[in-house]
Length: 73
Image (tube, rainbow, N blue to C red):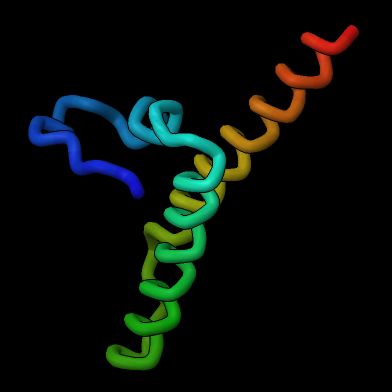
């Protein structure tokens, strides 16, 4: 399970995502999707930050995939 970084305000989300393992990163993605759906249902509006979270997570997953592929060559 992912752990909270106590001084995360000075630690950008992109850097925090790099510290997560693959399963933790996918769990975080799932949790953001659940939270987005909850907020949409509760407040009848789409949260603006969901696209940003998703973009950061996808970029990190793509980077990890490319790194693994290159290390096998």
